Image (tube, rainbow, N blue to C red; front, side, top):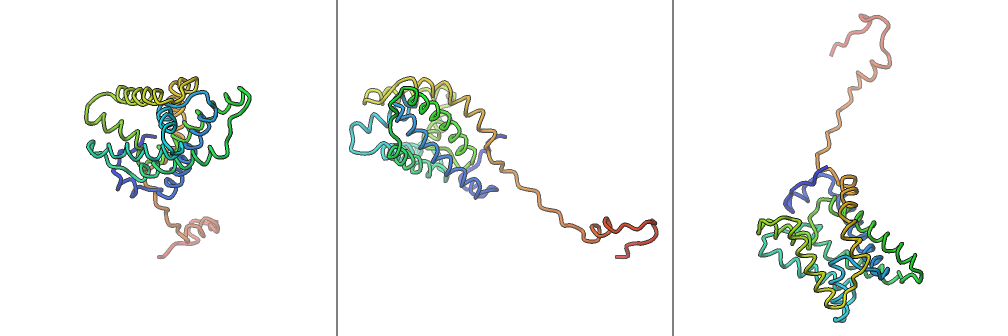
Length: 238
């Protein structure tokens, strides 16, 4: 099932809005949980989180608060790119940061290496599934994805080149600020794309309008049950 190319207003007018909003919020919440899982594994972070963690080492804000502030600042970059945020874009800024801080408050680093590896693997898998959920809700991209698509539209460069350039930039900047690189960083880069490709078709909400229910003919129902033995025994007269 393909994703629809809709304006923010069309996204809200499309069918199955309650289902899509519910899926969006669940997906964003799980995305924040997955980020916290990777952080607590201490085996490496995804590129943007290397940047978030690097900044968090220098300012008196929590990791989730840094995620929120960064998302809001990236959203401002949409203005010159003439990108329009949807409901999912706005919720992305807030929900992921809140969910990651809430998870970090109750999740501690495992002592055993096996536990940390399990936390990392679970975080990567959950991240891909959560990303598929909120993308499949079709209520607008996140701030960072919208920055990528906006630059692609304005520059004419390929998605691969633009995304790689952005993620390398934040990765290098985050590492310079003290962010954590490691096995998780490489694993995320290799695994999240194929996993997202597996999950996305299965959770994308169809925006095709549902067919109206046909009215049942009471006479036809009665006649099917009490069909006379002879064809001329009963003739419909109205």
